[in-house]
Amino acid sequence: MSDATHVASGKVREIYALDDERLLLVASDRISTFDVVLPTDIPDKGRVLTGLSAFWFARTREIVPNHLLELRDDGRSMECRRLEMLPIECVVRGYITGSGWKDYQATGEVCGHRLPAGLVESEQLPEPIFTPATKAHTGHDENITREQAAALVGEERFAEAERISLALYRHGSEWAAARGIVLADTKFELGLDPAGRLVLGDEALTPDSSRFWPADSYEPGRGQPSFDKQFVRDYCETRGWDKTAPGPELPDDVVDGTRARYVEAFERLTDIAFDDYLADPEVVVR
Ligand code: Q0Z
Image (cartoon, protein in one colour):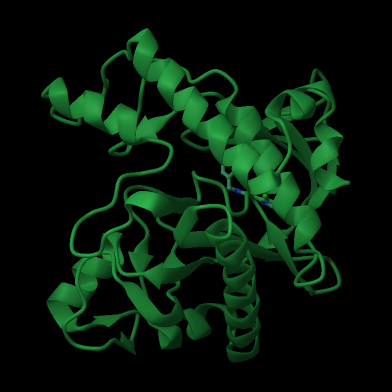
């Protein structure tokens, strides 16, 4: 780590430059809820997210190449190829929730996709839709139409990004559904390699970049509980917190229950014991 210079911070992750071609992505154990990072860590959360990303990168290489070069022994750091990231977030939605639900209620459309009338909150869409967003450096990403996205990246890149994103979502959502997890929606970040080819970067199909819902309690017509963060949200609600920083410290039972949910998501999706991952992170890419 002494040879790496810090280049960027996300809410719960850090990026370091290793050299001109390589970055180190480090996932912390921080957790955010209602857009605020809480003062209490969830032990091993960063390892769960890194392991899941690496798992998906290994399993989606036939769909799109990715930036992963090496998973480090700490289980929370990945050496990656440095890419020229596209200036759009590649969001795919299979269910109508979040900002998609808001936009649909206001206009009957999401990112220019006209949807059937009468959808209820959290309902599955007739088919998954690609709903690009701009990268807001402060505040929230903004949904944009395919025309706006195509103007930012070019028609040809847009069409390729859409095709890749839908294929990744279909793969991930079918895999997750077979293991009792609804992948409601997800966000990919694509970049260009030096040859100008699209490459999957950042994290992929993790609970921080997606909405995971427990399939056994799925019920359209209401908001769904989050597979991973529901204990934290419930606790924050009982505290009557106003959702401005700083958030509340979490009690041990909320921390333990939340850690168990992250580990459960990892084990269900990978069919690998989390202890085996801790002993040798490369198990997820073999
Ligand atoms: C990803 C982000 C994070 C803060 C830049 N392979 C890549 N090449 C170039 N840039 C990126 C990547 Cl992954 C890149 N982000 C998002 C991640 C902390 C922001 F860990 N920003």
